[in-house]
Length: 193
Length: 282
Image 1 (spheres, helix red, strand yellow):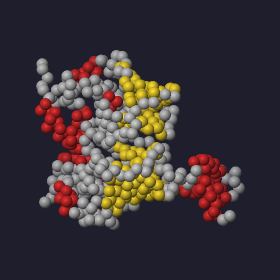
Image 2 (cartoon, chains in turn yellow, blue):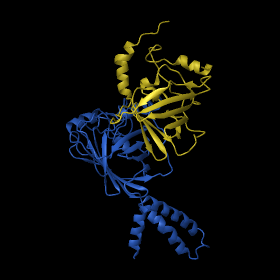
Image 3 (tube, each protein chain N blue to C red):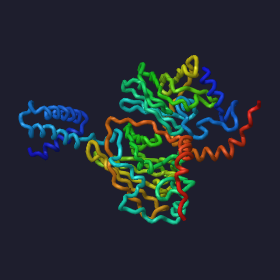
Image 4 (tube, helix red, strand yellow):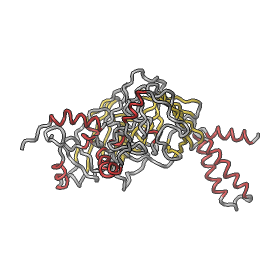
């Protein structure tokens, strides 16, 4: 990590896991948006739908979605920073969709451990349909403000679930708050020195 | 062949994709011609040449297709109740809820407002239809997706002939099915709603038994006429008939990401909204 990222990392207190601490400030625990690419790491399904000029990607988690523009446009130079960024895609061959994205704000974490990223982050993903019901998924995160090298995410396998539909699972602050007060906060131990 | 039958034929042509493109081209060319009178000796003729395809263009719209980004012609209505159409009498169940609901804005606003939206709980349906932000229809096989800029939300309108489920899990945006009535009107029926959302910012409640029928009629290329009827006998003694509203196509706009972010809303409430809210007069 760069010194910029290290300072952020030290200030970030996850709500769960080995770095779990009271007063956790993981944005998702108060229902701030989970953002991209963290949403890709959740064990909830996603759905692709293809429309003219774009591929729509829906995530059950948070009931979120993003358009992946496939109409040949380039990533904008000055996109307003957003939670899910700005994404363009192209077919590298008949079975591989390559998605480039940027325009992220720096408020989201890369995952529950609290690894930060900057608004300079660029993400490249490859969705390769290896057989009828299999996508091989690879992701690389480039963020020179935060990391001295690109982050190469673990190679992952996604399976088609025909006949299933995404259900509505928004993160609801009032429900999350009640859960935190009743269960999570009492159960979180103070970190040992 | 009289004028009406010409219009009818051209209108029919305009409803095919290729015909619509052709007319759009003719319209663009004729505008150029009309603004350059040397190419057409008579100004009235030039005007006619320019106006006719423009008229037909406005009439023409693809059949059974509402794709695109739409915006209310005027600002949002904030309540699904027409000004000349008072909310029907509430049942005692609804009245008790209404009295407990404290809006953050408007004449009923009070400190400690409990409008779910003001802590970024989902706005829900149909309240989201009355926000002054655009929505977009994307048509896919077997379904239409309706994206709302407000909250970066969406719902699926199933078009594959299925029925509303008898036992849908209550959801913030419900369960919706649609069918076409003629070539221009999408009729959407929905139910399966949670009762935790408000109908609008005043705090009118609804129950889980709420059922909604909406009609999106594409009156011309750029216009949808929108009607909504809410039936909820547990909460209201008669159906609520929403105000007739007009939506306009915005062909070059794209939706931006406007998520309701709890931490930001909280900071705004602490700094601005709460200090500015007067205590309610007894």
